[in-house]
Amino acid sequence: IILSFVAFRFGDFKVEVNNAGWWSRGTKISNRAAQELLVSSNREDLFFSDKVKKETGRDVWMELQTAIQPNWQGGDDEDEEKQENDSGTLANVCSGQWYGSTKMVSRGERHMYGMLKTKNADDKNDDKVESILKEDAIYNMCEVEEDTLTALENSDSCYKCPSASNGVDRCISPYSLVLLARQYLANNYTSEFATTAATSIPCDNLRTLWTPSAQSEFTSMLQKCANWALVVSSNNQSAEQKDFGNLDECPFSQFMPTVVDDLFPASYPPTVRYTSSFYATKKSGSILERMYEDAESKKYDGSDGNPLSGVYDTTESDFYDFYSDSIVGRDMSLAVGSAGVTVVAMIIHTKSPFLTLMGLFQIILSFPLAYFVYYFIAGLVFFPFLNFIGIFVVFALGADDVFVAVDKWKNARHELPHGTTEQVAALALPDAAYAMLLTSTTTAAAFFATAICPVGPIVCFAVFCGLLITFDYLMNIFLVFPALCLYDKWILKGSKNKCINFDWCCQNTASDDSNATDIESSTRPSTPAVTNENIDLTESDIRHNELEAEKRMLIH
Image (cartoon, rainbow, N blue to C red):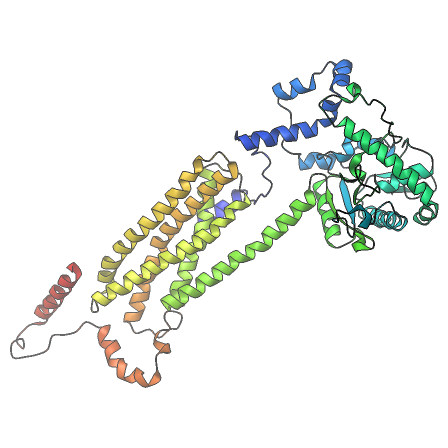
């Protein structure tokens, strides 16, 4: 118990679902994941590699291959808190340079985005799909963004910029089809300053101005921009080296193809099935969690299919991670259920609440003891959620050990009906300990052998489960075996306490009296019958004969 307290009090016990830090373990898949992460975080410098080398002399690709990049496996929460109101980021957002930039879509920036689709977006027939560029859909999308911005402002989750109309700081409008449509209608294709709801075209006016001719011309511009984006991403050349030929240049200087789906360039008539809206949100851990809670409580307008439907996440998939964590947490109720099933099985088999309680206690106590060795001796400070699967293993094996010990004791008592508790223990417990040792050793060895795997979380899981099984066996020896001795002594004394054993109360009342004598005689040493042959035997001779009989039975 003391070791268990030390383990949880000073062992920095914390369950971690995030496995950042284990990507450097050296396996092929981890190396590829590390490469993808580094390339993604340095995408802009790699894209303009020639320009960067000319201006700064840095060879970005060579630097990534030869120099260790700081904090490449994940951000520091404390640093994120400091960057929450970073003046440089705020200036970038409010200047309008954030729109269409790589910072907008960067995984590390963790900006929230909404993904909207039409009702029948999955239909492959373009004629049957209602495009998001239609009047009702673009108006609905505008209202969705306004409602979402209001929720972000109320929770202070977005970067706010001064509004030109009243000087009140407001969240800037997201980068989306609605923003591009407003720029088109205002004949301003470059965002030289951030757009807020107070300075942009209201949704009602947008709907009025969105005439068929405006829609047709805007769609044509989108097609030019989409085709331009395809050429830019067609090969490994940088943007300065591209040969665009006779391709019309995209009129939007800050165009990102995220506003359309991959089928749009080839669709006829031109149809946008899916689109995304990027919001300039903050990235501290507390704010991300608050945004997830707001998304779960439907504070962000998902439109719900009228005529659009949508979902939200961040560029780092934080909402998905929060949701996965909550699902895994709820799945822990299965562990509680397994404990309940185990308790019911033990109490039915042993017919003793006392033995059941001690069996449950030895299973539970093995967890903190295993963590003590895991943390303080093995030096493993990372405790992945995968380790909790060991709960199911230790409950199953722990209950099995209890069953073995109880059955061995019952068999020994059957062979020595008149033996003392010490004699029964001498016969039953070594046999039970040996049987449990074989099963526990083979199972623990199998888990410990898995520790040769180079995958970090699996190593932690293997070591922890092996320790769980080891300590469950030891606790069975130190707790359940003494409990069986106490249990037997209480039964020999004729205890009727239901917490010790309730088997006697489950028998038929009519047979209780007839069996009373049998029960009493089976739990009390018998005396040899008095005949002419043994009437002269002394008390010490009688006791000697009893011990000799018990000795023969014990040897048997």
